[in-house]
Length: 202
Image (tube, rainbow, N blue to C red; front, top):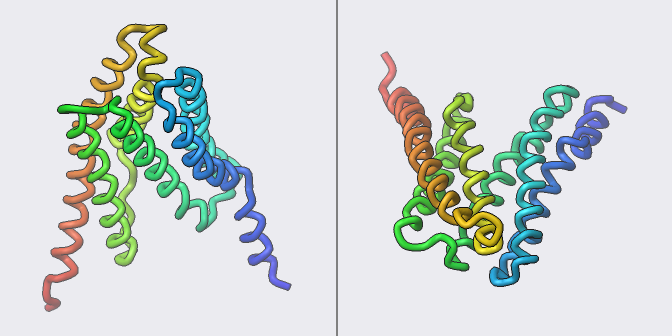
């Protein structure tokens, strides 16, 4: 029996991948809590779930590299889990009215960028081209998660710190602006490779 398939199976259930699976499972739990936005206890529970999911986002990649447990399923599911968590949170916050008015544009920008980048990554993967994550993109992701955390706390957080919701909206706009900047980087890379692909050979 080959050792490689056994190692691949073990990596599928490695701790980094289990953390990624947990992040995916956190999404329906988070959504369920936000179905009762007026209940402050549910707000805090939703925030706790979101923070735990955000921590696993850092830990799974770090542990996979530190323990040399990178796997194909992990590389596939990790960005999917991140995008599903962010998209589900934004949609529930819009439905609850925590994101409204002009702030809706910030949420739309973030969601559209995620779709754009997913499509570009799929296209570039076919060309065997990888686009490394920039420092600005990492800051964007961090600010995005912090903004959503403040907005999830929302009215419950406002009772502790009166500016909780306002800080969340401001950070959401900052994240949206960084999203436009990093999205342009991905789009530029994709367009460059598209032009090279369509250019006739010598």
